[in-house]
Length: 455
Image (tube, rainbow, N blue to C red):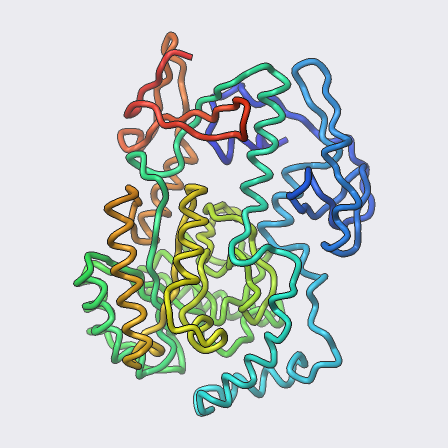
């Protein structure tokens, strides 16, 4: 069985013993683990068909302790996978009686999307998203279910063993409190032509970003444009195939498109990918050949495909690293919410930073041409620069996150007398930390650089 906590925290080898579930194969549904954590999967404690009824089945009450070992009434690795891979989303299947939810309407919409006036697009999108505030799960505006589940499981194990401190490899390099990435999706020729201005704006505030470009049909992608992106120190990534909303409609067609996407990944020497409109099916990702993907929102209440991966940390889907979107897209904030401020972003930043997570953004040069929107984006950059200096946040490119997370996944904590030493590629940037259990909730403390303190 996979060592769930070791994978997440990078605990010392042998600290986490396998705790296989005795749960039999049965009905899949929602249940709680304590008063706040909503899970999805099979559980001996029972499950509900709807997330709103999860509180009727609290699996925490069924946890059994045998000496220093604990037995969960569910398979925690499977539940975490169900959340990260969004296997629970069948509850949010679109209502068939709503015209905007029919497949032929979506296909028609994408066929004329580029020529639709903004007001018409906004009306159709707001109609589709009507009622989003009442979705019970994931939790808006940021969902920490996967992260909470890891913390609660570690707390239970520590309590069972009478341990108050457990060493682990800190989440980010050089002891950074959290991480932030900026990404730009280019949707139209107008956006492509404005992208240099947006990159110059980022650079003027001390930031670099990744730029995702649609390789077919939408607009030309001159070699000079690709070179300009890279010469500025930005990353070039592939954005879907033709951004028509149909990448995952049919598996056979998906495989054909995936092969073409892979060819563009190799052609442009790109490491990253994001699908059009954040459509996704992570169960099919074994067909892709890029290193990291950025198509999974943390909470997708304002995305065409509902759901969310319920975590603010990167995670592996097979060989691919998933780097989730953890804040709201600029288009959603401006056009769907009609909010021309950074207040929602500030709230999301604060929540994610408090949990030491990845703060990731999508903005589009297409929607920042307008002066009012661009001024708001400048306010965001100014705010990010301020907190970067005040809070020791690691501002990175997605490729940097990909490299770090892969290195961290291979690092080991090795005992050296009463101390701990981190070994592996990239260890010079790693920091030792401790999960600490006292009278309050579990919390984290950093130790010295790549060395431990007596335990």
